[in-house]
Length: 300
Image 1 (cartoon, rainbow, N blue to C red):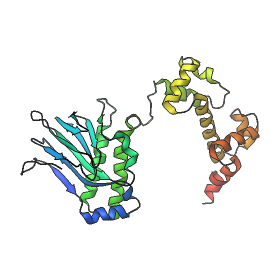
Image 2: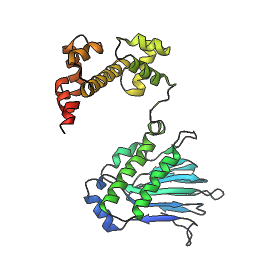
Image 3: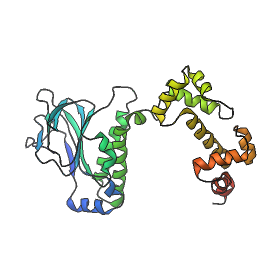
Image 4: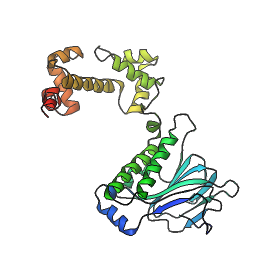
């Protein structure tokens, strides 16, 4: 990981996988997607410095836990402070080190695999963990510890596969930070979330875009633009998806006839419901009930 003092850093820990294990990882259909080759923690890493003119074969993640350091990448020297992360892309010239006056403590790991492209969007940039009560830093670091502790338990196929899934989740927590920090995606007070609550409360009523906009105090055009930006769907498209979700619920867990469900949820008739359902689910309501309804489930 670095050109460091011979006696290392007090409290440091590190694991580097043997080549035979990396070969095993590349042959396993699960682990070859994304796998860890090096992992460790350097506390109070005074004089820590590393330079690689040709880069490393793996992507290198550096998570600054305390103190300050720097990363030199793409002809730019970038400061890295507490609760900031930088992922150096594989095979790219770089250097990094601890600040001489406020040396950092860092969690770090090297990873590679066939599907690292999933996380290309977070490579080569500073990722800042917000200083908020819901940043879930402890949960994220627990994931890191899960990876490390499973390595300590040995290199079985099961351990390596579990590590792969933990790594995916760890990286996803950085790529999709708002979603990770708020399991419900957006706070209750957020206008988009308020819209969704209004929609869910009115699935059995006939509402239009103006009703939704009035409920949150926005113009229809402004709300439509905000909603598309946040969800990739218009409010009415989203509302119709929620209706189909409710149809699925009734088909699975009630004995209501399809025409009764159609009437209950404001469809013109059973044909209208069936057409809308097939468009979303690519299966008819009747076939959905046959596959997933309670009676079917009880037979299995």
